[in-house]
Image: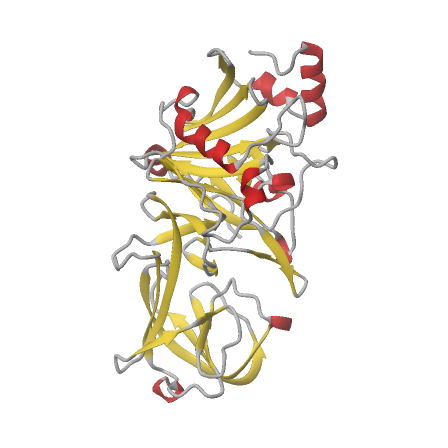
Amino acid sequence: MPPLSSHPLHASLYLLRRGLLPLLLSAAWTSCQPGDAAVESAQVVEGVFHHKVHLVKGPWWIHVLEIDLPRVWERGIRLQTVNAPEGGAEKTSVMAGEALAGVNGDFFGYQNGRARVAGLQIRDGCLLQRPHGRSAFAISRDGLPLIGVFDLEAGLITAAGETLPIAGFGHEPKSTELSFYNHFSPAFHDSVHAEIGFQLQGLEEGGAVNDTVSARVVQVRRRAWPLLLERNQWLVAAGAEYAYADRIAPGDTVHLFLRLLPSGSADPTRDRLIEAMGGGPRILRDGVVSVENAEERLGGSFAADRHPRTAIGYSQDGRSLFLVVVDGRQPGYSVGMSLEELARFMRTRLSRFTEARENAYQALNLDGGGSTTMVVRQQVVNSPSDQTGERPVANALLLVEQGGISR
């Protein structure tokens, strides 16, 4: 195994302090040292590898989780987003629980005392947060990855076949619009305030994004009422001046649809999306380094300065998925990367260290800095930059075995 620092004792003390030494001693690591780099690799499960890469010039310590998507999908292993409980923030390692592995997720802030992620999020086919003009990673029911800036189109088809556009999600409707809620939607003081609301009960399992579901109008509510929804239930609320509320009545069978497509795409047949995680900016587009921070309203210094980074990308054939974290803000150990350095590493150097011998063809930056964390089998394997250790975050992206975490 290559040395972790210039002195073996320093390496052991470092690993012991971070709680990583037991992990390294128990894992079946293989090592190689191609010139200016050293790599340690271990299989997590069949089709999943953890690579720990040391690049001398930097210096940089990088962790790569390599996932053979067709192989793990066949075995029932899935990607899953997860949120901190009760609208707060939690450490990635705590949210990961018994998951095989995971990384921190999207940028976030606080609104009305609740942690709110900045971009798109889908969990188990249900929308948690609508897109907001930045790139996101998504994966289909069949395990096909996708990165894009997404547009959301939603609507309700009445019993008479009329399509009523739905403009809002997870918030009280404006006076002339419809808004909808699902069982993940929070409401101010757990109540909805609207002129009228229609509670829908699904007539079959479904509801994945880019799907249409049949539902029955089971209840009509007015003015204000508690938001109490279960899975396969929705609420469509109308503002005080909405002109078409009389087109919906109790007992009606209606259809609810959500379409989420990359901006500029007119393809209505896009696969059902089961998980999505926002981030930004995109850093690789069709095999070309393309740091799109200006387009996604992220500052130039954010992109150009070296920071700890978390990113996700996949190969040209869509078979190999890469979760990448780069440690930073630790002089002499790992200094962090600019987004261009991160993109170039993923585009030109990943193939040197991975089982598939593939580079990333598409890639997206996620939240970084002190939030940058990778967990493999209940162990934080990287070195978070905060002096207090791992930083609590709002959500995370996990790799789970069948029947694993679901919240």
